[in-house]
Length: 363
Image (cartoon, rainbow, N blue to C red; front, side):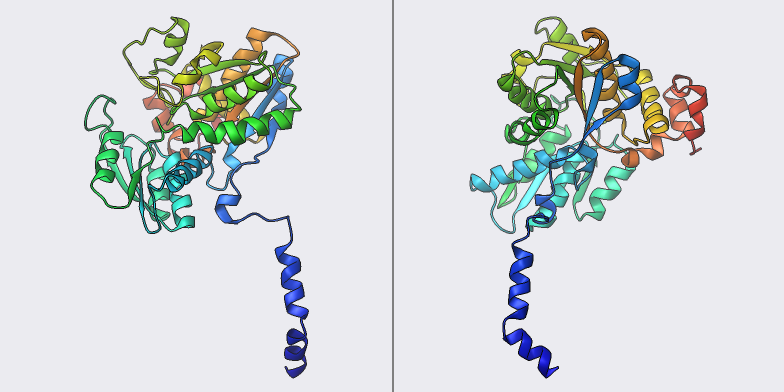
């Protein structure tokens, strides 16, 4: 023991510590692990379209989704503007993934996290939020212009608390900035600037707007396609040249589709070249195909984005490179997406190729 103590006081341990601290092979906790996700080549669909279909694997973020990026940036923005101080409260209205990202970021930074969300979201998301220490308030899913909408309830809750901030992901352009400063540059670097199109769906609009702005700045020839699920008005808005229709119906996808143009998306609308509408039947079919053919286990929003990439490939023709976003994994939706009862309730079992129905493992 005396010999060990003598060696430590002689400077051996401090030298080892300095060597560890100078390493550049680790990141600074949860926050440091956000971003720099892989860009995945989807072989089967690339072969089928004679294009390169690439998916940005955002499910590999530490919180499991693309929303980790927005969560970090809206909190950083509040800190930088002096709206959030140590021990404060972060409040958000979210369909799930932004809330999960915020819950992680708040734990890492020592903030209280309060989430209001539509009660239509999967139980897996609600359970995970609570396990991460967030206070969760599921409320009835009503239109944005209704005062009882989950976003408005979050705003009122934050307004009544000292040292609290409503991060307002839909209209807070720090969300867009996250993708302008990180996701867009990563895609450009990972493709070596050799891409022809980018497509993804929008909820807040931050991902599409931020990535589009960066890519168009680097090469104006890159085409941007908005992907839209049933029940959203953005496809018709783009196709009609700016006529906003009334929102009708819904989709199996969570967290995407809109009844309005958010502040994240509005300034960059002129960057959108075209749009594609993706029915739920195509989304669920590709979700099962990717699991079977590629071993990629993704949620419905990610699957919709992949269908959109395939549709864009068909529009552009062979020998083009199309990039999309794999928003999150299927783990947060498996009690629905792989349940026969749920799929039957949505009349989607027949949309799944018969040889892939073996993956429907829940009653």
